Image (cartoon, rainbow, N blue to C red):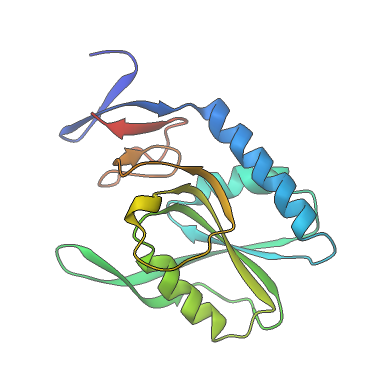
Length: 179
């Protein structure tokens, strides 16, 4: 097997985006957020499990005063998740009149983000934006204005840097795509 490929369960993946590029793009997002949220003390809501690496590296580079909280989303599921968010789990902060930035690992169809934004908007934030590590524009099925996108990618299945394939791969420093 090529040293730039890995095997997770029954699938092979090849290196797609190296850690250095990921960090460079996250640094640019952090600078933009610092400018946009100067004097606003935003609340970052990191969506677990996938966004943990992105959230960590982004917030190490954000220099303005801010808070972070972690949430999980409970979705309706059968054989395949519908992306319909049933419940936001772990949100203990009052978001009313706060500037909220949701941190996501990847936005593809947009179902999850769309439903999450609806639920958060019902709580009366001053503003709400989404920052995502990866976005698949050709898959988007909702009219979402995602302000902070580290990188857009085609509709490839990817793992690493927080993204998993049936539980494996989240700990990888680089992002890999299916071969």
